[in-house]
Length: 414
Image 1 (cartoon, one colour):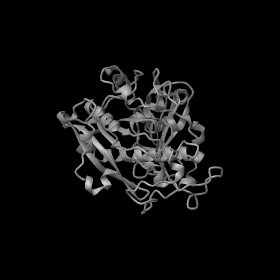
Image 2: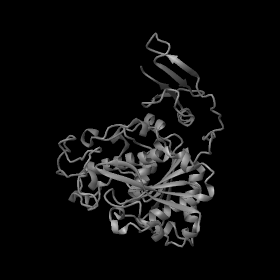
Image 3: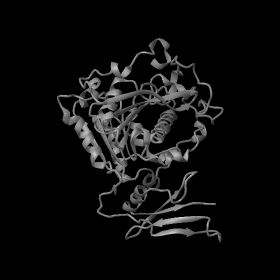
Image 4: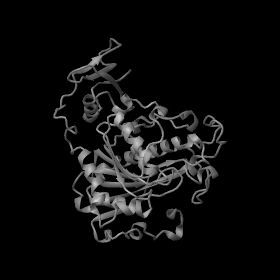
């Protein structure tokens, strides 16, 4: 990486990437590069932050841009990623583009025909390891990583768990951006995720699983981080993404999705001649999301393959890029308002508050209950993360459960 080479210290990748005719140099879009947001697997991981300085006095929604590369390559400093991030910033988003742990950071190889051994004796490096698996700045990786997590050389489990690593990193990046919300002017209630290929897959699947709803954590050593699970994405919009892992692999249910993805919506631009992520994967994504009541639009680029950036960002056809942003604006909630479109005002949404259960102490084991207006319904149980209370669930989460026909119980234990 450039930031590991001292003789490149004066190199500015944002200047180098102003090459698509947008002339960002003369705009009010500011680039703030290489901001550390987390440490994992013995590496520091960084993000780039893009903002419109002409709107410094506003709180704008956050956009996170995630690069592709098969979960084994790619960078936030790819010029196409920087162009995408600047475009979001120019359209009214505080935007971060992130690097995240790739296969070489954590995977030390195992026989592809055998089960992955439990963490500590298997191929997984520890998330909180002090030292990296390979020397910093060299870019070495296990041979099973070289052609991507979905290749035939990789272990079948590796792809599913590579998605979970990227998912976790994206949540940490959003958490970091939220921690600077006052300084950066971020509306923490409105978030968009954008990516290409593996980055798009990561965005889309943030609606389906988190650090708790996961696949075989006993082999990865990845423990739940409840505060990360409370982070919500409103809209995911990308290109050349899809879904190849059935939700039941991670025990995804209507109840987990209702809490994880309230008001969610997904847009995928896909070439019908894509052989890297076939369009059948995108079709499966749309079908799956429909089952969970999540609006999804598959925008097909006829005759196009996997690399859609030149097609989508073609300045002779602005309608192509506008189609994605129109979708985002349709589903992104207004700032500070009721984000559903059912005509129901859910202010004062609790039907019962401070309901005591299981103890005679009136100050312990309390819950709030919100009920749908009519009909039979299931129940979504929400347990607050460490450091918060049963009163800290937001109106958007309650609305999502009610509008999907579920009662919601927010509870705490002693």
